[in-house]
Image (cartoon, rainbow, N blue to C red; front, side, top):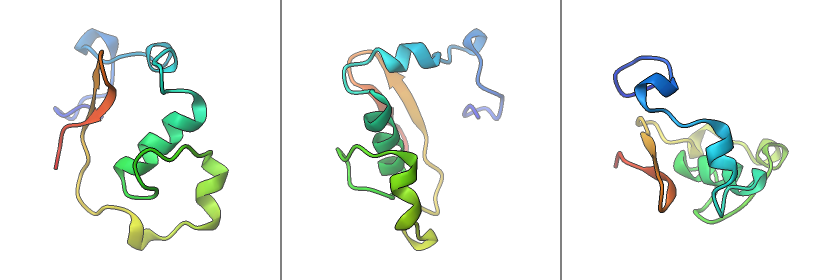
Length: 82
């Protein structure tokens, strides 16, 4: 969901998956790792597959606060909330 509570859409400036895929560090495992790091499941910079997260999954490791991310053309996905 967007910050305003609306669904993601290109009309509102959301990026598409193809844009993320062509980013230098956004191969499938890198993207999964980056998203998992945003919520506290893996350390930053660790690439992983979704199946890799299952065996060690623990709700205690998942951040309780909301995490906002946005696309930065130079850096890719970046966290915008604390």
